Image (tube, rainbow, N blue to C red; front, side, top):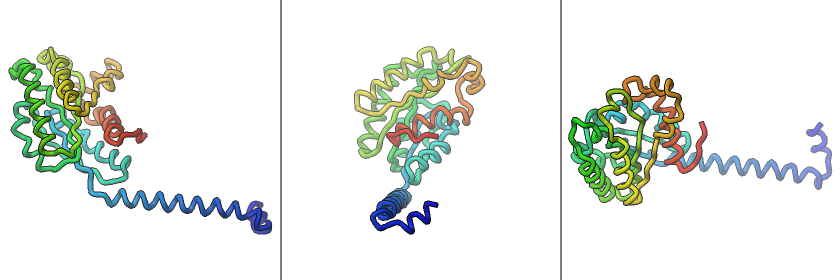
Length: 231
């Protein structure tokens, strides 16, 4: 048996084994110390800023849980969002975002700009998002600002947004011009079959929260953490 052999062996034979044990113990202590230090950090504060895709999204709690597990530190995800509103409304809500003193700001503000009946032109939407990004960067210079493209639209809600991709493109261009991060969730939705996509977004605009969490959250966790955290 290994136990007896180690006990009876000459010192030159058992010292390497005990040395390995000591190394493993030291590594475990370092790992525990790092985990404890991370857990003692203040919460990472995230604000999701947007439309009904955020207000009704339902993915924020999953993001909070999974990002906290990945980073091994507390995470708090809040929202400044309202269904049916545009980037013009968002310009009046910056004080609310700033008051949260977020470390990360997630933004989606193109969806209702793109609707025909709200009369927000492409040029106006571009000016608005540029102004929003500039003000947030000026007032929260240390915050990470991440612009997002969300899920596709279909049915009537798609018909009233015939140029939605153009609105996404100008928002992305304004982000890139400022060196601001952009996360595009559309490829994740495109991997679904037409049947699964219809079931996931039954009203053509607002995904079921559990499906949104499966598609949006892993992408955001990996992007914010800067690594693949797995499941």
